[in-house]
Length: 312
Image 1 (cartoon, helix red, strand yellow):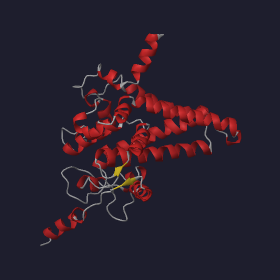
Image 2 (image 1 turned 45 degrees about the horizontal axis):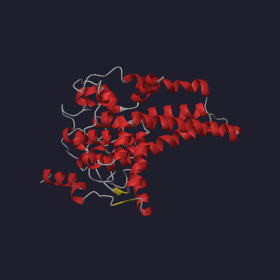
Image 3 (image 1 turned 180 degrees about the vertical axis):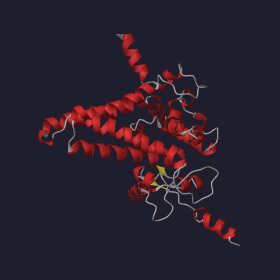
Image 4 (image 1 turned 90 degrees about the vertical axis):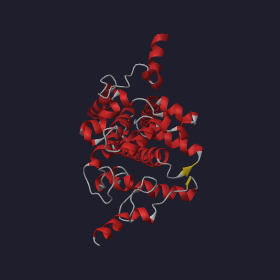
């Protein structure tokens, strides 16, 4: 019994997993890919649980709140420090982002900082030069990219609560999924006319929502480096893409971001819809976040300066 309990706990402990990971192997670790495959297969559970307006609504809400946690906090805050917030708010959105099942905040931000240093080169973990599959999801399923690069995230690694989230990220996802199941069971008991259940909310609110969320996020690593338009002549092949911006709440303005990563706003111009920034702006009115860093005009209009030089 104790051995079984230890094995169960070790499954959620990334430090324990790291002991058996070959960190020199860049190929896909097929033992680690099994949970990723299960995540996708579980979506077919919709055949058994059906659907309801409540389930679809929960799935959409689960997608949006966790996507915001990823785009605004994992990316713009933890990776680029483009605004400031309090320690409690930092933890809340770190928890929600970890519930997106894309590893913990320290792992995510450290790898993203490394990406900006080596974007679209052989040293880039998810360079499109390595092929669509690898740049989309193969890279994070390899042993070489399993560990958190703590030397790149020392500023946030000093918080023990963030280190806990990073170490037990799978436990956070399990807590989130269990909470959705309990919500569904509670609704089925209290308001049976809604036609939902615990299993229905688990399938829709966690599995379907999470698979859509993961692939939308990963599309910025893969699709946003070959599909779209380039306003700025960056050293990488980043692109701006309206469709990707819509499904990721603003991350699709990727060429803008690689041109100037320090801004809280990735849609540099008024017509570039950046929902994450709009929410951050509203949160700044409440005092929950502050010091939203803008795009300097010299960077924003750099493409016009270059065009002016060429036309002389």
